[in-house]
Length: 124
Image 1 (cartoon, helix red, strand yellow):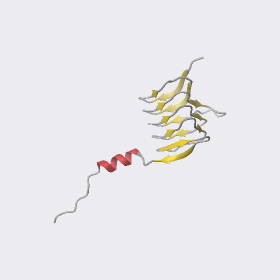
Image 2 (cartoon, helix red, strand yellow):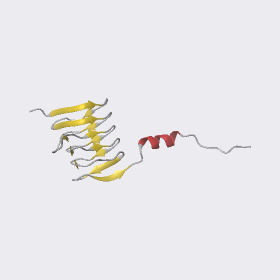
Image 3 (cartoon, one colour):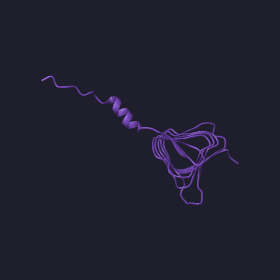
Image 4 (tube, one colour):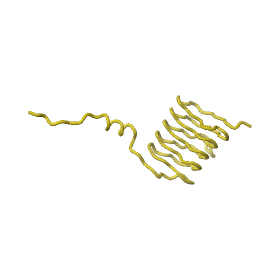
């Protein structure tokens, strides 16, 4: 029996699997720059469609994601969390079942605010 198994229609560039022991993944799609820790299970429940994982998602040790759920971009799934419903973008979820414990501003908005030039008053 393998200790690491991954099956997905598409996997984005930059997937990192830390210590893949006991990690089993059946996903519709895994976005770019995702990180999976050990003992993670992603797959079907009684439905015929597996989860979809967004971009820049971190899934920590022992987390389980099952069913036709979507994990939003830039989200974090905490250790030993059970995800059975959609997770929005830019949040951290934790618990059994998963609950949002931190909501962040979207990364693009944060970056844009740092790079926007300051408005200056016209000297005329």
